Image 1 (cartoon, rainbow over the protein chains, first blue to last red):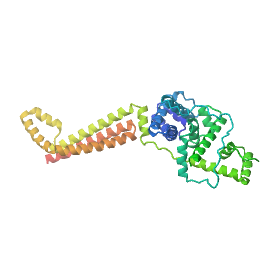
Image 2 (cartoon, rainbow over the protein chains, first blue to last red):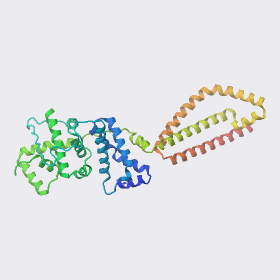
Image 3 (cartoon, one colour):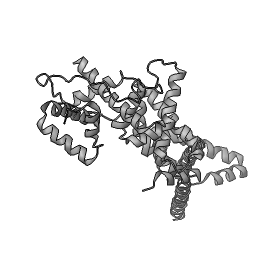
Image 4 (cartoon, rainbow over the protein chains, first blue to last red):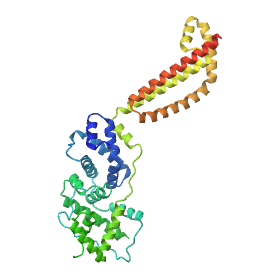
Amino acid sequence: MHDDKQLVRETLNGSKDAFEMIINRYRTPLFNYVGRMVNDRELALDLTQEVFIKTYSSLHQYRAQYKFSTWLYKIASNLVIDMWRKKKIDAFSIDQVGPNDGERISMDIPDAEPSVDRRFELTEARRKIEDALQRIPAHLRELFVWRHVNEFSYEEMADIKNLPIGTIKNRVFQAKEMVRRLIEEKS
Amino acid sequence: MSCLDIEQIHLYLDGDLGPERMSEISAHLETCSACRGRVERRREFEEAARSLPLWELPRDFTRNLMARLYPEQAPLRTWLVTAAAGVSLLSVVLFTFFLLTGDTLGSLLLQISRGIPEGLHTVSVWAGKGLTLFSALVTVIRQLGQLILQGLGLLTSVLNPQVQVGLILLTMIISAGIFLGLRRVFHSGDRA
């Protein structure tokens, strides 16, 4: 199986098949990331296409010492931010600095009492998570999606965002607790 | 050991602590039901969060994107499909003409040039035959054309252009072979 760097080299040498393989490898995870960031299927489709087009046109700038997926998601993240800026979407800027950055998490959401703690069915739990995800700040939602949907390590996320690993972990924990709190509040 | 804070719980669930610290927490969880409950609820949450359903892309996503990235592909394929459909249609017309008349268009033109009155007569007879069969032939050709276009559309989406050109050439050679072979058979019948 071709690795990403080899496919990039072949694409730069004129192979269409190589870039098609890159698309097929990353289209679903990218679409799922972008989709959850914009929460609109058609817009997510357009943006996912734009990510690949931007990647293709910038491929000569890619440096092999970096992981290709990290570089690709950096492009995707910037395009999502640009789209929001163009549309002047105000709520929860994706690149804003979180309120608890650099601090230990102090947000301890009180757990429901065991007697009322419902072990709701997994499907229902997923639906509630999806719903709550759309109500947390975008810069936390992005990390939540990368961690749980795209299954990135903290190191990979730190590379994409150019942030210390500690900050990334803190934000991911914060995102999880916030989603849990929203689910608890709604139940 | 004191009860776990939220960060410790998440680090524990991630397995992101040293082995000694992991053992300490595991031991604490055996004796502290409050912490055990908090860890379990977060473990269930993690399980649900890690299995969120994937959004499915349309099947033609890659094809559409490749057409945007490599725009010369689309005109090439369109040209190939049009050319192939044209060649196929012409083959059908010539073949039908040959079956009806036992002659080729070339020889018809030769006859016309040799004697216009005789040629006109021949043409009018053929035109009568042709008109009778025209409507039926149009239906057949249209359906055949649609089938050919569908087949070629499928073929061009799967094969690269070089292979496509090769296949079209091969089809033309085989068609010509069949045409000439049938012509020989018909002519031997005429002689007999």
